[in-house]
Image 1 (cartoon, rainbow, N blue to C red):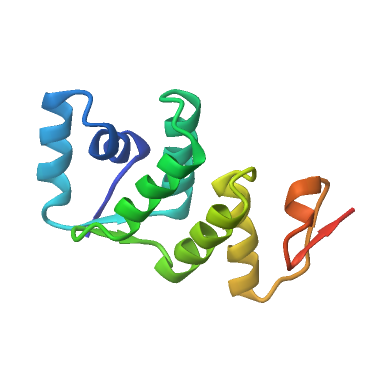
Image 2: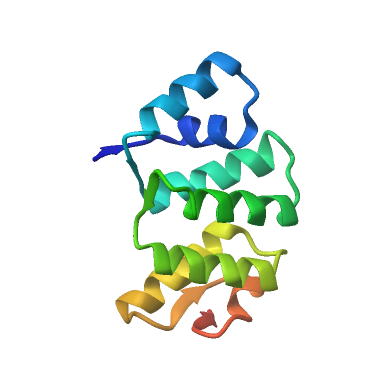
Length: 126
């Protein structure tokens, strides 16, 4: 299975360039793997460049995680991070993904200086 980069996922979500969207769709139609890093980076781009708000970001995450041609790295962890993000949209999705990855690996608490993140179960403010 081939892997995809952030810009491919951005095209699938935004569909703002017809030629690139078609190329992205064709590439992933054979199946494509999405790393956590690419998923987090995609959400960052959608927030920072396309100015999507948390609700729209959550929809984009759901779309990507449930896409019939995409295989997201450790899907259950990505879904757990999505649930955290939906409950606490003031946090970044990447913060939720870091916490849920640490939880899955059995490496809690997650030490952080981030006040918002430290309020989540499994995180500890330093």
